[in-house]
Amino acid sequence: MSLVRLKIKGISYSQTQNGAYALILNEVEGDRKLPIVIGAFEAQSIAIALEKEIKPPRPLTHDLFKNFADRFDIVIKQVIIHKLVDGVFYSSIICERDGIEEIIDARTSDAIALALRFNAPIFTYKTILDKAGIFLKFSSKETEKKESDDSIVVDEILQEGETVEIDSGATDGYTELTIDELEEELKKAVANEDYEKAAKLRDEISKRN
Image (spheres, rainbow, N blue to C red):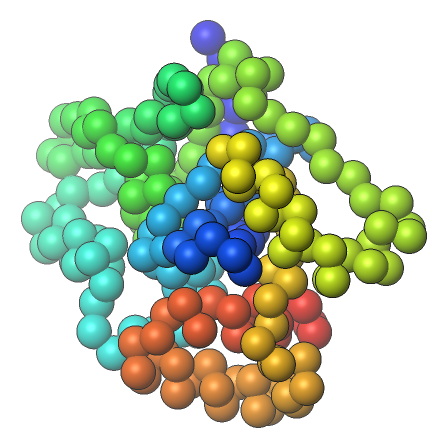
């Protein structure tokens, strides 16, 4: 079976379902997206890894794993999303130590959080992408009202156990802040280890840039 390389497109969250997040993976050489529902902790950990400038005052669980692996010369070579059963994705982490490869079973959200920290590529099988991949396109009118409608779309899709690629519509009043004020709030959120707030601030900053 042929492997398809994926990249992270973004993370979205639900306004009505506490702790419901959507991780969107995009095929590198194509337009299909692979949406995966993940937990709040994993979403925060992935968001922190994506935002290189955010440095938690203490290591998160995935950072601790990275530090542990570095100490014992263990390298993650790649992550493969190898199975989809009843809407649940199963993944394997391909590790190497002293030239010997090992395959470790992992939740997809954990595997991707670690792949980011090791700069390891993420793959899935073409059959899985054919089955679960989606196309998402916005017309010009839809794009104009996208910000107000995004959270509704996320909630509707998450209720069905699926997700779509969107930016977070809930800004908690962040749209009224300047870039400098957003950066300052981001620093405070990281210092207080409020990574959910940090992820929302990062999303708002990214939309401005």
